[in-house]
Structure formats: C-alpha cells, structure tokens
Amino acid sequence: MESILPVVLAGGSGTRLWPLSRGRYPKHFLTLTSDRSMLQETLLRMARLDAMPPCIVCNEEHRFLVAEHCREIAQHCGAILLEQLACGTAPAAGLAACHALRRGEDPVLLIVPSDHHIELPDAFCNVVRSALDTADSGQLIAFGVRPSGPDTGYGYIRAGEGIGDGVRRIAEFYEKPDVTTAKEYVQSGDFYWNSGIFLCRASAYVEELGRHQPDMLSSCRAAVDSGSDHRDFFRPGPEFAKSPKDSIDYGIMEKTDRAVMLPLDVGWSDVGSWSALHEIRARNEDNNAIEGDVITVDTKNSLVQADKRLVVTVGVDGLMVVDTADAVLVAGEGHTQKVKEVVGRMKDLAYTQSEAHTRVDRPWGSYEVVEAGEHYQVKKITVNPGARLSLQAHRQRSEHWIVVRGTARVTCGAATSTLSANEATYIPVGSMHRISNPGTVPMELIEVQVGAYLGEDDIVRFDDDYDRFDEDQPLPGPGGSA
Image (cartoon, rainbow, N blue to C red; front, side, top):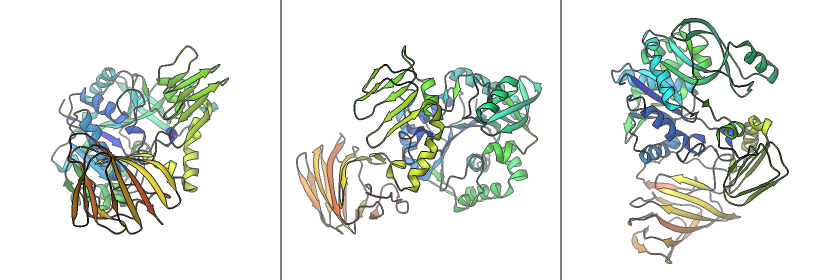
C-alpha cells in the first residue's frame, strides 16, 4: 500500500511513567509491553500495512537511539527528522508533510505516536485501510476509542452525524475531564477517547495548516527548505524552532471543517500511566502485575516492578511500586496521573533523576554511574566493537581508566597504546585523549574522574564520529561521558 506514509512521532517524554521514563531515555525506548521497545512495536505494526518506509520525527538528542532501535529490528526508515525544540504534534506533523511534499510526493499520512499499545495490530491495519477513501476525499480523520470506563487521563471526542462507512463528523473535542464529567460522557454514548492517531493527505494537512496556523506552516516550510541530510537524518533549519507550539487536536482538528472521526476498536492504550500499564500487563490471581525480583504477601490490585534489588510488599492494595537504581516510586492506583507533577517538582529542585538514569546510552555504547561524591565520580563504561569516543579534553578533571573486559586502544597526547583486561592508564587534566574498541566483543572499563567540576559541559571535542560538537547539555551535578 504505497500511498501510506507512517509518520511516527517520537518526541514525547512520558513523564507519567517516571522513574522508568526520563528526559534522556523516554517512554518510547522502554520495553513495557513486550521484549521490544514501544518504538519498535510501533514500527513493526506499521510494517504490517505494506506502506512506505516510515518517517520518524524525534528529538535531536535521541537521534542515535532511534537509529539503533530501528537497526535492532531491521526496519529501514524513509527519513528521521530531528527537532531542535519540541513544539508539539502539529508542527511535527507539518514538518513531515512538508518534507514529503518537497520530495514530490503527496502520500496519505498515518500520524501515530511512538509509545502506544495496540493489542490487535491486524485489526488496526484493517481500520486504517478502510479509511483511505475518506482521506483521499480530503478529510482529516481522527481515530476515536470507545471508552471502557470514565477515565480522566484521556481527552474526549464527541461524535456528530454519520457520513457513511462508520465515519462520523466531529462535533467537539474535550479536555481531560473530572470523574463526574467523564461518567456523563461515557453514559451518553456519543463520546470517544481521543487516540492521538490521525490519517490525511499531506497536501490536505498543509492546506489546513495554512488556513489555521499560517506561522506554523511558514516555519515548517522554511525549515525543510533550509534543512540538510546527514547520515540517516534530516536536520531542519533553525526556522523550525520558531514555530508556534500546539497539538494537532487543538491547532488543527478543532478549527478545520474537514475533521471526521472513525471508531477504533483494537485494544488501544496510550500507556499513559502506571495504572494503564497495570491493566495491560499479565496479572496473577490477586490482580497483581509483577516484574523482576519481587515477593508479595497479602498484596492485591498492584503493580510491583523491581530493577536492581529485591522488592517486598506486605498487606497492600492498589499500589504502584517501581524500583530503579536511583529512585523508587510508590503511588496509589488512583493517583498515578500526578506523577507528572512530581517530575516537574524534581526539575525545579535540580534532581538529576528527572532527566537521566544511572545508565546512559551513547552512540558508541553506554556508561553507568557506580558511585559519585564530592570531587570524584566512578563509572562503568562499555564501548561497542569497532566504536570510539570523541577526541576530547577536560579543563577541570583527570581520569583513571582500568580495563576489565576486552581490548582498549588509548590515545593520550601524542602517544597511542593498547590495554587489555587488568591494565590501566591515567589521563591528566587538559590532555587530548580518546579511547576505542578495536575488538569484536564489547570493551568494558572502570573510569574514575577526579576534579573540582565533573559536569558534561567540561568536554572539549576536537573530532567526533557522530558530529556532536554543539549539543553538550549538562545535567546538574555529576556529568557524563563523551
């Protein structure tokens, strides 16, 4: 079905699923409903459509993570568009539409979030196919989900008159309601959850942007015209960051007279809270969803997830307990939507746990903070076979490296040496240095940083295989690795 272009929106943060989902490793990279990430599940679902190679719109900082998740499941992308700044779903879809039209194409855009769960993927594809004629006629289609209960975590669509083939006009969009209002919506029978999935011709979307968001369209067009391809990515011009911020729902669908709705009955969930994930996961006879090293006694209706240690619950009902290496969440089942507020408070108080895990992925491998204190930090660094870090120097810290697995090729100043397991080297303050893995297995080393300041922005790059010369974004507190 060559006319469909899946547009996968991967710029969200998923703050309601903290502490697993964080700014630098958000929800769509997590394995929440299977052994694949949410992004990978979305891409494989799109592959069932036999459509064009998908277009992914993501944060600039996450570009290598996106590419790696695609590579792991052997999914080729038609384009990976990089947002310098998250401006909302409306300009993200506008960027994809303008990019497609600039290439001389006018496909039907299937705009999908990267982090939703659909229990019946084949049924989903059938619904999409059934809507193609409506999209061809110039309509903008929103997919609505028949509510299973008065959920306050979703926006709602009130369906209007039918226009054939199950399609109905959209009477109105509604914000997330309180419990009383949500019950009224469900009882009326005319309200659907807004899935955030849309189908329309690229040209139709651009026309409606021009009518209702002309500044947004101008920013998207200019950013595509001045943008450039690099490796597997398309980097829009700086004009995109000047776009007004808005969602497709409010920026376009509420304003256009071409908005229609098609019911979607495919076991959909936006996995937007721990309570929602509890409903999706397999549960035992006590209605508990358990993952990791967990022991429960007299525990019911709960989700308990252990990451790094044994977690035990005794005599609890309706709790969401999530343990990670550096943070633990304990929330009542009816309060999980408020986790987003907690993340906002952590940011205000400069807690690093709002943004990064102790383990951080990099295009060359990963690092994990083992211990940190005043003027020192200990990390475990893993470098993939054939990969290397940037050629760099630090103004305020020295580093001690001890190889514990594999082989490391180390450059320090004008000297180059090769280290094996149980061998070490020292990198003085200000020395230009680089480490690479010439072997065929992952190389692991322990790095001890010592200095008055250990922030990520104390990295001066002279050469980098990944062109990361202008993206160092320091976290408060101890920093990362290049």
